[in-house]
Image (cartoon, rainbow, N blue to C red; front, side):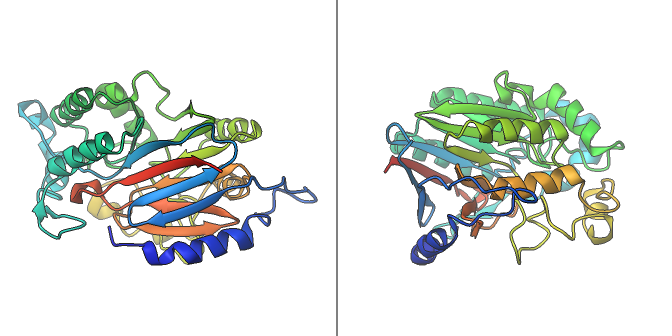
Length: 331
């Protein structure tokens, strides 16, 4: 992750300028007053401040580890896993530039979580590069050894065997059930909420780039509580000027702009672009007066945007050792 400390003043100014504005919530609707919230970023350490936070605490977030461990049980699926099994075997460390690898990156993040006394881990997609039993078992062993609770949502690679026929939503459901289920610890894979010290952590699976009506209704329920919220999604929400990697709600997303379907051996993105549900979700998220921030992965590149007073922070890939430390502080 590239240092982002020089953006702190910009972020503070952007928040002050936009916090009361937001996006339109519907024709004639009066926007709810924005929650008193602030955001600061130093490298890969984020500080979120709000009076409704009951006590200070830390959450450590990881995305895009891309573990490729496999064994003989994966032999019948080699034709579907071959490309991603070689994609991130060796990487360069996000700080030092020295050679490293995904397993070392994941272990480093767990050590960092212990060092900063994080009370929760957030695993925000593409922890594995394909649904390998060996990789999932390795992750579970590492997590249990670390002794920290975690929340998890899938990324677009976690459940995807490239070239396996079928609609993406069906393949996601199948491989979540067959391989990824232990990572959810009994939570609903599509949507879940966890409250810690007055903050509601909402996790939604948008790994097909789309949001379902049930997920939108769930988000609305959480927003209606008026409690401080954090949103975890694997794929970032579109922010003005961002490319298609910020594909959830991107106005150009769809079959006509899909350049990766042949490489990833999957069905093309939806004809006609996003569903109305996905676009409603995008609009309502950035209009949420009690949302402290959106945190995502997917792009493998650190970035920050402020839209309608809401901060979205994307982490660099944990395959390079990167992670985000989220510090929650009462005002």
